[in-house]
Length: 383
Image 1 (cartoon, one colour):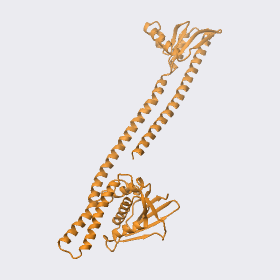
Image 2 (tube, rainbow, N blue to C red):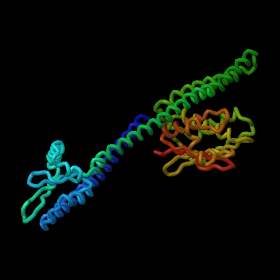
Image 3 (tube, rainbow, N blue to C red):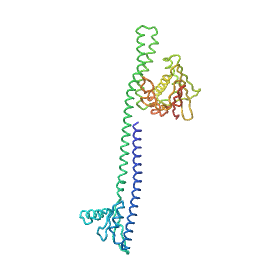
């Protein structure tokens, strides 16, 4: 699980880097296009100035006051090194202001290092220069990727925070469910042992049979202890005869269920139906499925267990005659805490899913469900 969590985080990191690079590249293209547009406007201004001078139209201040304010980026016009115009004509009117001149000199010094000033030419002589800077939108575009990435980071933080809340909630459900499941699992053999003790106190004649049953219940307690130990560790795999295992599980239930309950096993007389797995955990998983099938059947429960194999898989189908499961809940029934029972705690099938999928690399799924019953399938790859 830790390895899976690390892979998810690493994947999100790479995704974030890719998203940032895409945004950055697109942003740079937009900035370059805006700068090209600004340069084209500056060239037009230089050309317009040249034409005004060429036609000896001396009303340059009037030209500046009308034309320059329409330009959406900062620039300064100089003639023979003297400041003459700015795209803010209000500034132009105060061109003798000392503070303004300091501002203009600083502007020219900073922006000449970024962009070569464009000349205003008349009679093949440079009469003046246009010094320009980035449009105001460039600053906004430059900051945009960082703003977007900040929003993405905040979003990811909220997503992880939400996942943590859900995970913590699931953990609480699992711990509560495990405690109840432990009590439930221990309850049956302990109650049985208590009954056998009562019979022994009454000097029952069939003591050998009682001792045999006590031994079975003690073995059952040992198996329960092993189950909860193994669910959190890497399973020790062994070769399991699936048909024999299912028959033994059926025998266990047959002793404890009413005669109206029928569990039928079919396997088409196939041989070599073996699985590499942890016997105790696989038995636990199958018992959970059978218990859920029995709970789903209100009257005269019928469970058909069909075991078969394909070229690549070994499959066990469990079909009951219960009330069925809504298709929207076919996956939800395997989530911790989900239950349709009034007194259930929704752990059995989630533990089964962990045993089958996480510990044995198998698949558990609902393949069919209607008002006549449900079929749950276990599928294991054949090595």
